[in-house]
Image 1: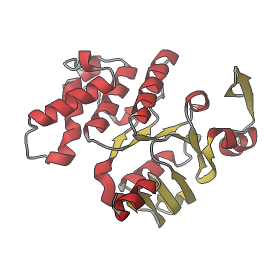
Image 2: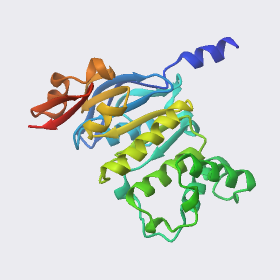
Image 3: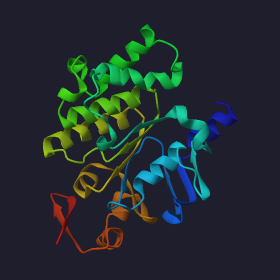
Length: 260
């Protein structure tokens, strides 16, 4: 392995250093610093309005920070857009648009082939494989609006996979889903992590993070704590992050959190 390749392989998948960002004069992020290792399933945990979506946009290069920077595999994040797949919050998607699940996933190829080129056979095969990875191949020809909430999230994840991204940024994928659909998504996340992808999942769902993730960044405009779950998933960190009292319950070795 070449020296440069070795350095890249040992670099954090995502490294955020002293990021300050906001809108107008209102700060959404204050001195945010953390790093995530490659091949990690990490939760970006915080209440509504804590800056999670803004931070994802900074990492994507869609929001310029006032100060600091985000790096992806030791290069400026804006130079690594091709290595990052993104799933937005479901509320910002027009589910009434008359396209099939396959059409949506194929849209993930346009970042590589360009908007003016028609997808070729290889692009279609990559889209098909992405649908298989999220267990949606049998619904490829269904209209996106006919799918359940959990199925729609899986299609958006497949679109990110079709970009051939090694890092996936997912914004509130569990919101509004029942326990069964959440469990299906977690199984897919574990499969993707096992295939070597790095996932950063913005969420305020503490139970999903506590039961299935291995790393977490606790955010409330600033980083309260980050690291492996056993070290950071504590009552002190949760109370400081959510600014309210939480009850931690240990069930068969797994820690769950609920509001008192």
